[in-house]
Each structure stands twice: as structure tokens, then as C-alpha cells.
Length: 391
Image (cartoon, rainbow, N blue to C red; front, side):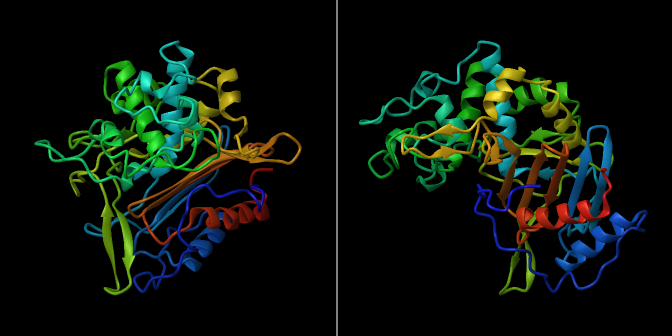
């Protein structure tokens, strides 16, 4: 299991609070003791048939330990969450972005030691610091300002903003948004880093970021139902049976109701379509295939993956336990207990974690904004251990 003192990389919300809309429970018939225990666990955390839900997968290679869903994917049509419901991965998308960069590194199309300005010359050459490399972006040591804090660039005639729209804003708004710290000085999680990496990938391959992921990541991994929401027409017009996207919801206490916060067509049309830091939509079925691809080094070379899972040292002398796209959980003896990532955006709360000793992977996808997947993971892991289902 994850060490209790492992650093949490995303500022997720507090532990889930039961809402008035989730006051009773109607679960599918339990087929095993662990499923019955899971239903009790999610009921205690306020999930019910009338509110947003979650989908959970616990697996070992070739074996499903637990696959269970609860709640609704969309309140409008009362569609239940199923293993095929697609969710916005939020920052778990960063693991896919890093993989795209490392694929190109392995192929010699770029190097993680490249100055980012080689690919995004619009960025200013910040004074007083060394060049910002792609590795700095991957490890969150760039010191760049958060692009979501910048004044928004014009959306233009297309009506939505993309990575390209933000590329020149760092120079135009440099006086108001300088480097937060000298590059390499310390770790500071920042969505800018991965938005820019998404832009770098698109420019290097001369196709959209989503197209590259489809061709070089989703396809080889067998992730048939995954996509990147980078334009209004990026979502499948006719998704496979059961694979329609969920909608993310936030609880509005004053209104006493769930409110839509984020979604994909045809239910919603968002206007901020930057990707790389987020934007990947997928489901439990495809996350199992992603897990196989990561475990089997199907996408990047084993040595490259080893580097991605190696902590680094920042100039302040501290160990950075964020690798190349992965949160790392050291064991205190120079190794790792596991690795993964969490995500939080627009009512979606997500988590992917692989425990190395047991070989167990846990995926949690939710469209309920007051849900903490990290806290839930500990309870779920205890449940799995108690039932000894993977021994």
C-alpha cells in the first residue's frame, strides 16, 4: 500500500461529504463478499443512485480483483456509471503526456534535455536562470507562472482557446508574471509545464496532440474508447455502446444541488480546450489496457521508463519525488513502493496507482466534485487486504 507519509501532489478537496441527494442506496446485486463490502464503503461516503458516481478497478496482471460502479454518469438522463463510461482524467492525463514525450525521445525526434525554446520560441529567455529544459517541465521544476493565472488570450473566431493561443502570452505578460523561482531550484506542481509539453508534442510531430495520442498511445495500447478533448469535434460522434462521457458535478451548498462543472459534447461545449495538463477521456476498460501497456513497457523503452520512475534532486538539495510524469512513493531504502497520479478538474476526481510489491493497480474515476480519491484509496486498499482477494 502507499506509505501514509507519501506526499500528495494535487490539492484535492477534503474527504467526501454525503449530500442530501444521496440519501439511499440501490446497488447491483453483490456477487461476492468484497463487492458487498465495497457497496457499504461507497454508501458510507454518500454515493447513491440519484447523484454523481464513481467507477473503481482493482487488478493484477490478467486478473480483476474488483470492478464496481456506483451513482450516475449524467444527472440529466439518469444514466448509471458503468465500466464503459468515459471520464475526464484531469491530471492523470499528465502520465499520457509524459509518455508521448518519452516516445519521441526514444525515437530521436526530441530530447528531454532540449531547451523548451527550441520548440516554443515564443517563450521569453528568462534572465538569471539556466535554460528551461523539457525535463524541467516533466519534473515540475521550471519555475514558469501558471498559465491559468494569466489574462486569457482572445478565443478568436473558433470560439475556444487552445495551447497555441497561450504560447505567446508568457512573453506578453512577462512583467506581471515572471519566473516564480530560478529554474531547477525546487519542485512546484504547475499545469503550465504539461500544457507546454502538449504543445511541444504537437509541433514536433506536426499533428494535433490528440491525434498523436490516438495513433501512438491509445492505438498500440488497445484503448479503443479513449480520446483527447482538444476541439469541439474531438469527441466520438457515435461512441460505442455504453461509452458516452460522464459530466463532472460540483455540490453548490447554497442551492442545495449538484451543478454541472465540466463535460464534453453533446452535453456540454467547453471553451478552454488546452490539453497536456488534462484533456484525456477514458474508461475503466481502457485504463486496464493502459495499465498493461505501462507494466509491459509497450510504449517506451525499459531504460526510459526506469528514468521516468527515478527521483531527482533540485538545487535546494531536496529530493523531488515527481518523476517524468509520475508521482513516486519512495520506500526509504532507495527504492519505490509504487507510483501513480491523481487528478482534479471540473467535478472530476481521478486516481491511478500501482503498488509494486503486490503488483496491484487501483483506478478510481469519479464525477463527484466533493470526492477525495486519495483518501478513498486507503479505505479501499484496506478492504482489499481484508478480503485477501489477490493472494
